[in-house]
Amino acid sequence: MSFKIKSEVADSVAKITLEGSLDSASAPLFQEEIQKVAGQSPKDMVLFVSELEFMASAGLRMIVFAKQKLGPNVQIFLVKPQDLIIETLQMTGFIHSVHIVDKYPA
Image 1 (cartoon, one colour):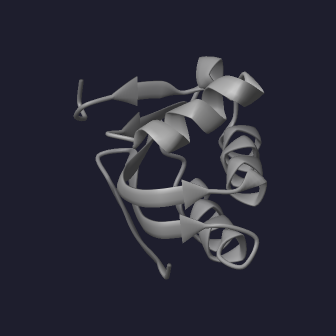
Image 2: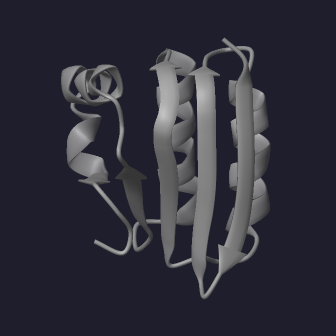
């Protein structure tokens, strides 16, 4: 599975689209995008993940990194995650730190 990522910041909202497999090989690319959007001080970070098929622990660490990098007042939204991604978030307890939504704004 390949990995694709694109991001933009508009109206104080960081929007990042993730596709494919987020693992130890692709996590550094995600980290670069997080750092890039963090520099623009967004109020929300929205991850469009409907095409994200797999997330390893390295991917989960990047979401934790995003939460730390962006600060406690920035909300993180995951739009349309697949069941496998939701299960990973539930097993780790991190599901309580993000908002799972069908669309953004919800």
